[in-house]
Amino acid sequence: MNVQLYVWQRLTAAVMAPLVLLHIAVIFYATRQDLTAADILSRTRGSIAWASYYGLFVAAVSIHAAIGVRNILAEWSPLKNRRADLTGAVFGLALAVLGCRAIAAVVLP
Amino acid sequence: MVHRVSGLGLAIFLPLHFLALGLAIHDGAGLDSFLRWSDQPLVKLAEGGLVFLLTVHLLGGLRVLVIENFDWRDGQKQLATVAAAVSAIVAFIFLVRVF
Amino acid sequence: MSDTLSELSVSVWRGVAEGRYETYTVPQRASQTVLDVVTFVQRHIDPTLSYRFACRVGVCGSCAMTVNGKPRWTCRTHVVKVAGGGRLEIGPLQNLPVIKDLTTDMEVFFEKWQAAKGVFAPSKTRHDPIAPIRPDTPARMAADAGIECINCGVCYAGCDTVRWNSEYLGPAALTRAWTLVNDERDGGNTARLQAISASGGCHACHSHQSCQELCPQTLNPTASIAGLKRRTAAAYLKGEITA
View 1 (cartoon, helix red, strand yellow):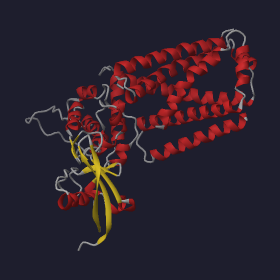
View 2 (cartoon, one colour; view 1 turned 30 degrees about the horizontal axis):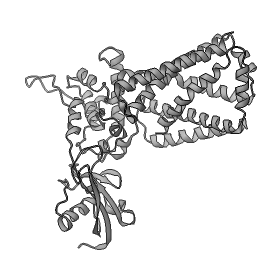
View 3 (cartoon, each protein chain N blue to C red; view 1 turned 180 degrees about the horizontal axis):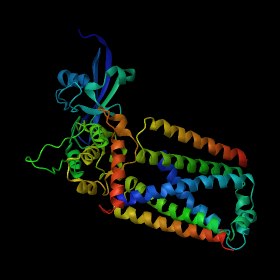
View 4 (spheres, chains in turn blue, purple, cyan; view 1 turned 45 degrees about the vertical axis):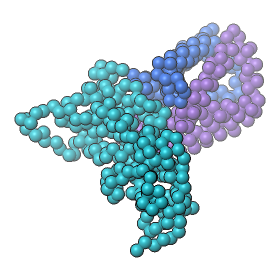
């Protein structure tokens, strides 16, 4: 890990701390209220607020998890440096794509 | 180590999470049947585990951010244990509410 | 003068990278240290045992070995504190190549010291007046907190990240870099911050704190490295160094 990856990882971590707290609260609420798909979607469809919140979350987690996975590969697997970087980047990209698709699924009317 | 393993666990879970949410494309029927599937006790137990992973990773991360950016305080190891305990409590409360 | 209390069963690493633990029976004595045990084996049982020591009073750091899985100064480790059930396991320091038995090759440790630019870069000449350094400025106190390192290698041997990442410079080299970063007489900071910001630099540290727990000089490399992380991040964001 170098200074650039470090800064991005710590920054996205700090950004996500409040987002995760809110997410845990949402999980508790949704499961307590036993929300159905229709209940959930009626709240998220067309909501700029939810789109922004989850948009930021997906962006941050894609970067954060990619760097984390890269570090694990570099330290615990035979893949080193360049190859670990590449694998991490591909994973991050996959998360970003799937995440945006998920947001589109629940937010687009 | 807990921090790293919980992060890895979450990283593996996340694509599945996104795919499940993607079931809401169109009119949510796919999502509904998924939600019904997830009503099973084993799934609820796994969800409790995920809540634990998320909370412990969050608290571990906060600990790292504090160590690296604020003045040194003794007792960091104890903080880590407290973080794990709090996460376990949170996950337990979750389980109680969904069962 | 020497009270023989009982006998110890001591497993000692013999060999190089390949080898095995050999067991010796050593009489236990009052106030005995692990170094006393190793010395007994070499003098009375097997003269071919190789090990290092110098001062034997806890100021030089030469006698560092792995005792029951933990890197320690053997001259400062009392047998009664570690020999549970009369058994001891003694091996060479981990994370370093073994020369023979209990001696390790510390060359890579010192190469990383150089790579971290743990070397003073003068900014004045002998013709300039001596710089008055106050001992109570925050920078000087930060430097003083890390300056007592005697390169024993215990932190390096105990570090998970050193074990997992062969490029990682290690807690000792980075602590020395930190003391120099805080030395207002030093003129080489940009190069130093650049050197420790590459892959294997201070950012590889996971803050496990094994170094801080194990350091026989009670230094805190985790805190020093945290300081380096802050300085390098700030320098990077200001464009003074590059990734």
